[in-house]
Amino acid sequence: MTRERPGGDRPAETSSFDVATRRQVLAGLAIAGGGAGGLSVTGVSSAESVPDGASEERASGRALDTEVGWPMFGNNPRNTARTLESGPESGVSIGWEADLSVTTPPAIAGDTLYVGTEDGLATIDVVRRELGWSVDTPSPVSTCPAVGTNNVIFGTEGGTVYALSASGGEQDWTYDVDGAVTAAPAYVADEEEVYTGTENGMVYKLAARSGFLTWETELGSGVSGPLAVAIDKESTYVPLDSGTVEGIDFRSGEANRFTFSPSDSPMTAPSIDRQFAYVADDDGSLHEFDSRNGNRKWTRELNGTVTGGLTYQFAKVYPATDQGDVYAYDTDLNLEDTAVERWHVELDEGITSAPVLSQGREVLYLGGEDGGVYALQREDGEQLWSAQLSIGAPELALYNGTLWAVGDGVVALDPGSDTSLGQSTPTPTPTETPTPTETPTPTPTETPTPTPTETPTPTPAETFTPTETPRPTDAPTETPTPTATPAPTATDEETDPTTTADGPLPAWATLAGIGTLAAMGLRRTTEDRTTEDE
Image 1 (tube, rainbow, N blue to C red):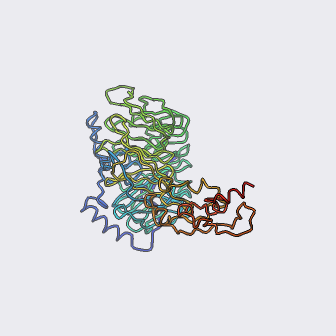
Image 2: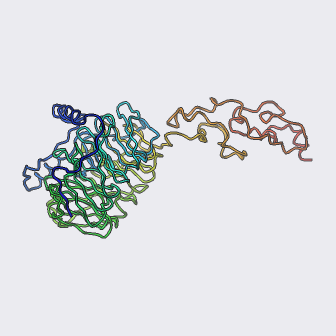
Image 3: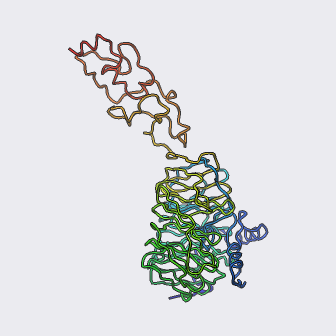
């Protein structure tokens, strides 16, 4: 059922300042400067005709790619997940990190990274590399943000779509929907419209500037992930929990374009390539269908489930599964109803992030369930480098030569020389101690002290990486012990737990927290041993 409201008969909530005046000024700047924050978002007008044929289809596909930044899920409304941005290629290094726990994939535009959290929306200045403004919401943010001309739009678990000023976070408008928002807003620049959907099977088209409703459509199943929009195909592609991709007329909202139903399990975000579309289901199948009418072209069974989405380039699609299998399938238009596997690699952990493909450098970036980030050569699947991060399962985005990874923390991965990079948590907890390579004696965890957690550690709050942890010689030479434990000797004489009969203990013994061991016989004289043996 579709309810169409061309004029938007439901007013949007706005902040107290004059939104219209601000928007008129910024819109003029965007027209003069080619877009907000240097963004270049191009597209095929709905009035333009797109000729048939492989070369024309590929050209139209490139025209709809966002060339700079990563302003929404999949980088554009077609969910191509590819960009002309470059990132770390032959090696990697840690450029910056922050202790910020996030709940959504990132969006980057105008030198600002936007990400959802349990508390609301947070930002990072990717040039200065510092935390920016944040806005609290009544419920957690549930979708990747989408950056429009001058605002950022996102949905929440509480069933509200928000639009905030992209520069300062002031509220532009809100719109309440039916159920938790499960489809990341797809922003279409040509229309200045956003499309989104909910767990209750509702799909909405809203005016990006005002929040007015253009149409809403009720489907028979919940929306299972980000939808895609291809205005040259006049369609919105909605993945559903029922194992269906529903084709909706992008102008009217009528669900009359097609229905593609290859499965009974939820579908991932579809990617629209030329005249075909790719989608995967939770049963572990990859499908290609005609984006104009929903006719199936082929299906391939994968080892595992695609959870993050798909990417493609030059008639090749690249699925990655939660079992760690990454594939490249050739889907050339001249190959009827078939797909040829070009390469297949197995990684050390399952892949859960949405993929990121650098067109300029031909590198595929993937995030794993255990914190790994991988860079593969697009042509043959060769692993260029990997980085093990302690931020949970990271989501990725490319911007200005840096690969940004977000999860239970934020890490900026810059080009470097390491091809196998290990990384601990961005902010060490007070119980962390120097690693064995930095201390010539066993670590405190190997010493049976009564309460090792009370041993002071070297100022972890002042550093983000383990390489900046002070050496053991920086710690105080006198370490208080938790209790005055008596030595297991027959004498009642008290002894200093940090000294022996031969004088003070070495500094390494004090640092290791083993002062009480001195009273138990460390460095005892031959005479003491004899007495104890008797």
